[in-house]
Image (cartoon, rainbow, N blue to C red):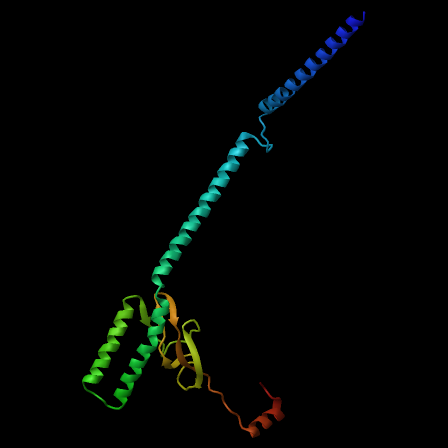
Length: 211
């Protein structure tokens, strides 16, 4: 009798172990069946929604790459066009000195081979820097523009509109479409009319002082 009881316990434990193993195998199968029949993914969206999301990501990445490529091309173009900006800016004082020498020679009435040599050197300088995009600004007689002009003084002038450049002290230069050096100029302003003290007092007595 004792032996039969032991066998019964052994058979019972074996059946329980088999049932647990069967339950573990059925669990994942039921889960995978739900995933297949429900047409849902881990994100909770349908395949059509996931496709739309992927397409949107692709379009955004393509647009960002296109913008990056354009910026890189623009930066490369600017580095080529303005790579010698510092060198050209340092050459401008030499051109200024040549122009001052020519002006002094003309004022003194000097002539001869030396003056001709200076003129040719000045002309060659302008032609050389002009080949890389440098050109002088025309300022005298034009309206004052703070982007290209540097006002040194303001002078009352009759017959000239206010805010007009009437004199140039130092030439300005452009490098392509960028200011290499602003022009130093003198700008016209409105002429102030001084009133006599007597007339001011009379006007004040009659109807008050007008500003």
